[in-house]
Length: 159
Image (cartoon, rainbow, N blue to C red; front, side, top):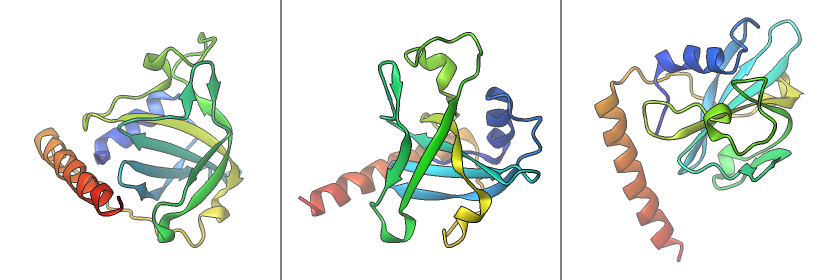
């Protein structure tokens, strides 16, 4: 359930922000099924995030969420206000055309991309990882299966 290093560039191209010169800051898992990947614009300090998950609930009908909030793990809590969600096309009138809003990475999950109402200094204190996987597709699918099994065990323990 992680993005491969080669896909970070593809995501920036997909959302048409590859010309901004964004700097990759790192990523953090915020729950067993969601990872946030952060970039910032070195000129303005603006913060961007790619949300990777198997099931993304931020998009419901014609409305998107105004924030990304997680508190599953105390060391990876967040409550980001979203300035706007980015789309791969300028010709989309609502949020139901998932092929335009979601990037579909090789790991089988979905990715959505947003500009946050925060600057890079807001990442201070976040425990970000920087070692993005260079694994192949088979290894990624095996990791996803293993993570799903751990999630099931974890959810049974909390029941």
